[in-house]
Picture 1 (cartoon, one colour):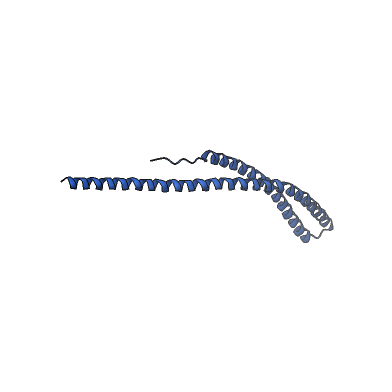
Picture 2 (cartoon, one colour):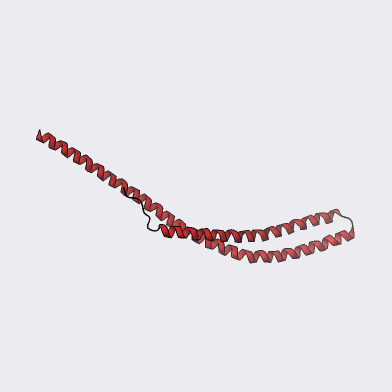
Length: 149
C-alpha cells in the first residue's frame, strides 16, 4: 500500500514555524500593552482610595494634600494613557500579522486534510478493485474446473 505524501508539507511546516514566531511577538506586545493598562488601573484605584480618604478626613491640610495627590494622579493617568496608545498600535499590528499567518496555516492544513481524505478514498477504491479482481479470478477458475470435469 502506498504511503500518503503531502506535496506542500515543507511549506506547511515553515508557515507553522513562522506563525509561532508571530505568536511569540504578539504575546510580547500584548504583555507590554496589558502592563500599561494595569498601571492605569492601579492609578485609578489609588485615586478612588484618595477620594474616599478625603471624604473621611476633617483636616483641611490633609484634604489639600489629598486634593493635590488626586490632581497629580489624574496627570499621571493622562501620560499613561499616551503610553497605552503608543503600545496599542504595535499590539494591533502584531495581532493582524499573527491572524494573517494563522489563516495561511489553516488553509494549508485544510488542503492537507482534503488530500488525506482523497488519498483514503482512492486507496479504498483500489482495494475494492483488487478484491473484485480476486473474486472474479477465483470464480473463473471454478468455472474452468467445472467445465473440465
